[in-house]
Image (cartoon, helix red, strand yellow):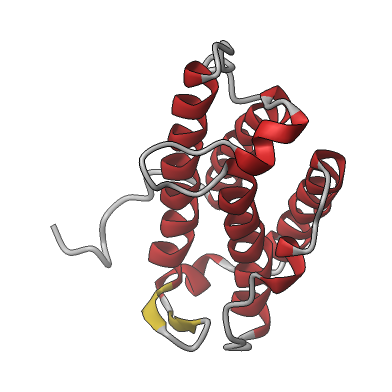
Length: 162
């Protein structure tokens, strides 16, 4: 089937709801970590969950803002890397969630098929970039689940996203 004539499977609003559901779950994973282990615990050469979270904070909201403004700014993890408490990370997470909602309102359906050079390095259709944001978050959250279980902490149920 020609992709230009394929029926719409998910609305823009439902895609945002799906993404924000993942973000709500990731927030609960952050909350589940003890303060010290959030910054120090790692397994098998992986980064601590604070560093994984800093990466997520440096991608989602800034990248979506770049997409809607069509600014190909460089990837920058420096601001999120300066956060020193779990409370700061959670506050920044909530800020990013609000920014994503604001930026999302500026997207038009036709924008999703346009190509955008994300961070000046990843030239793909906007929909593929957004799906990458979600996939990357799910991947890193999975690492957080492994860490929590290794610490003897029951992680949030993965299906409870809202």
